Amino acid sequence: MKQLESFEIPRTVIFGPGAISKTPQVVAKHKAERILIITGKSATANYANEVARLLSGYSVDVVRYDEIDTSYSKYDLVLGVGGGRPIDVAKVYSYLHRAPLIVIPTSASHDGIASPYVSYALSQKMASHGKIVASPIAIIADTTVILNAPSRLLKAGVGDLLGKIVAVRDWQLAHRLKGEEYSEYAAHLALTSYRIVVSNAFRIKNFTKEEDVRVLVKALIGCGVAMGIAGSSRPCSGSEHLFAHAVELLLGEKNNEAVHGELVALGAVIMAYLHGMNWRRIKRVAKEVGLPTTLKQIGIDTDVAIEALTTAHTLRPDRYTILGSGLGKEAARRALETTELI
Image 1: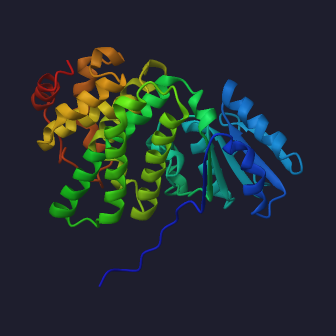
Image 2 (image 1 turned 90 degrees about the vertical axis):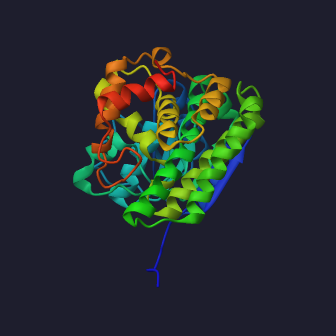
């Protein structure tokens, strides 16, 4: 008999043109007086200020993600308005102070929109607080706002979704070899998001219409729900993400010119090859969308990529993937050469 399961997924999802105007109605469902809006810089800050004006009947503070004191507790509700970092920091604040969280994305470059989890780097930084888990009670995705995000970020969202087919294959492998718990339903949701973006890649690649963004946002939200059901990021983060994280750690913020989703797409190509999957198809879709398909295009030295491939398995030793107990340097170089990333 299976153990009792519980999971949290967003109760309210509003997306489409002008969705941001519905923020007061969503907030009104929750008995909040003091509201914290965590945001980013420039354009995202402008949207955050617009949200604050919509909530003029409340006590609202708008704070940049890099200026917030997460130990300071006085808010009944927290809103994350922006891209990856503002939303991640909003999740941290929500987790630490048990404040309900509403996510208002201004771009769609990753699947953290509906996910209860934060980025690998931030989770490591906050490790002393335990596993950060903060499922949004609501998502307000204004496709008109997201359409104005840099095209590169939207393409990176496609790159993040291309990794799902590898993540699920890694999960299935861990289930067979290590007896890890596996949710067919969560895996199916993640794979459906992958298939949606692959089948629509040619049509949406330039992100010139609201419909293009709508397809991407739906797929990313589906991934977040999959993680909520699985109780971990397993259905959406496997060896392809480990590679991306390893590169990011090796280069650091100052030297990394790549966007996370771009690295995930490259990682997906490499790991699909190691799995014996159709890596050429993943690479073809990435190229069609306009994602980098070589290390040179993304500004990564071959030696950095090899080191990332040989050390990636150590980042999450609890998570078994196709990388097993480690990839040798020669095998790593051969993978890069065969997939023509170098």
